[in-house]
Image 1: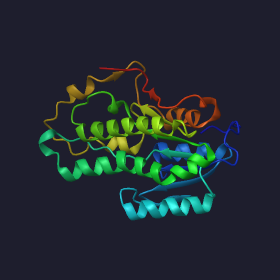
Image 2: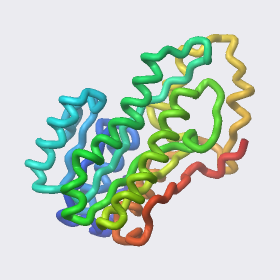
Image 3: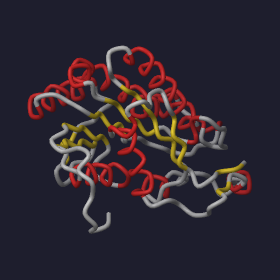
Amino acid sequence: MTDQPRAQRFTDKRVVVTGASGGLGRTVAELFRAEGARVIGTDVAPGESVVACDLSDDAARDAFVTDALTELGGLDVLCNVAGIQRFAELGTLTAAGLRQHFDVNALAPILLAQGFADALVESKGNIVSVASISSVMGQPYNAQYCASKAALLLGMRSLAVEFGTRGVRVNCVSPGGIDTPMIHAAAHGLPESTDWNLIAKSQSVMPGFMPPIEVAENLLYLASDAAASVTGANLVVDRGVVW
């Protein structure tokens, strides 16, 4: 974040940000606060101003929803940032690993939307979720992440149709590579025999990983009144990835 004064687009807005302990989620939560929002952040790992919660645990997630609504008195924006990514060859995939990706990347955001639905309808609020370019393109060694993010994207588009007539907007941002600990750790565990040339075939016109703020700004745009007529959208922020 810069030290420049920011527009106060979210003064007194009530916001929940998942994955808020670090990386993109932390940046998003900081930007919302800088623009006047009341923010509750959650993450599987506790952090400063972050509630510890495993969103793949049904009881823990339901308790978080109840506590957040009690503390905030409602909700204006649900921002689903939390996610996991681990590269794996097909032969090493496990049902447990696949389920974990779906639980965190797809099921939790959809079930959070369910839990906060009444509050969002009341406030005519919105949901912004972090999908990925992996939700719309095949990537080697990334089947569990690609599949789970594709499920998230289509799930959110379905909710956009379902809740549009009730005044709730639902959108996604699909980033390319972000300079966060998650992406740097994603390939750990791949064998030395991995065909890295296959991975390198996906390149950006503007090279390099993006700083989190370049993606976070787009999440805040979709959550703001400037995007009042935008719903069911998938905003790709990837520096021009080509395959």
